[in-house]
Length: 97
Image (cartoon, rainbow, N blue to C red; front, side, top):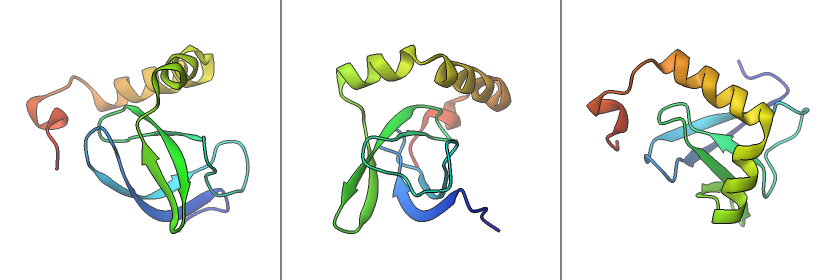
């Protein structure tokens, strides 16, 4: 069951194409907003939420956004922990759906 900080809306990772339908906000009980950062549980790459007429989608960050995002020490810790949890990458980990 989703918590009050979990938002349910299907989105697709712009890097690996996997669909995800639950998004948890780590900074409070609100749905993702335009510009918020998302991390894919499958490929571990970062994306940016983009507001649209039917809710939010995820897009690849622009070059400057990606540089800013990856300098954030909190995100760096999360990405490192997720990489350890996923273990060594395999051929099927990097293939699309």
